[in-house]
Amino acid sequence: MESSFAKDLYSESSHLLKVESGSSPTANGDLQDEDGSFWGDSDEELDKASELDREWERRRDQFHTIGYRDGLIAGKEAIAQDGFNIGFKESVLEGYNWGMVRGVTSALACLPEGLKERLIETQEKMNKFQTLNESVHSLSTMDALKLFHDDIMAKKEHLKAASEEASSQNDGSDCSLGNYVGELQSLLLKTPAIESHLSEK
Image 1 (cartoon, rainbow, N blue to C red):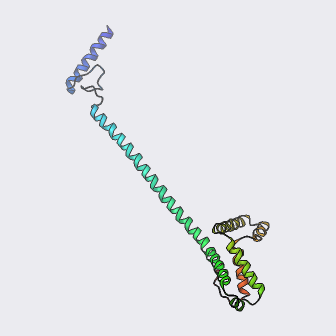
Image 2 (image 1 turned 60 degrees about the vertical axis):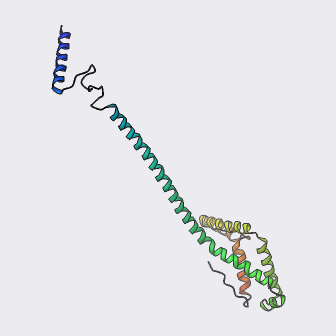
Image 3 (image 1 turned 120 degrees about the horizontal axis):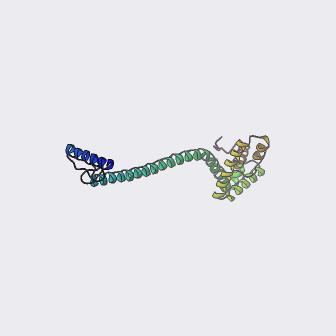
């Protein structure tokens, strides 16, 4: 009896709720509307909301990807410019001096013998200029670039090592662009008739 009393009480309270709210209760309780949707939402409204969520996710991913690409490109450009500036600063003086060595020795090699004798006092100096010219022109552009690279790496190692042993090893290297420049400078100092504008570091 008590269970039928509970059923009657429940059906009557459901009926009263129906009358007060103007909607009919369903078998699932009072959480659903007449059309079967929960909390007053229709299927169309749920579809629109989920479609908006999907569109939002798609746009967010799209803008995230675009922003990532733009940032990556901007970062590469900034790093590339910095690298270019550093490389230019390290190489312009070396390139200028290397060009001067090639130019001065080539110009002297092309002069007639009589003019060479007036500029260069001794045959020994003349032979040194000729030897320097031959050794400079025996290097290809790629070999000169490799020597330049080796010079830069040796300087970096010298800075890292900072010990006297490493310093003496780096200072004694025979094959470097700086050695060609130094040799030309020493020859020019002993030959005052030839003027040149080698740059100092």
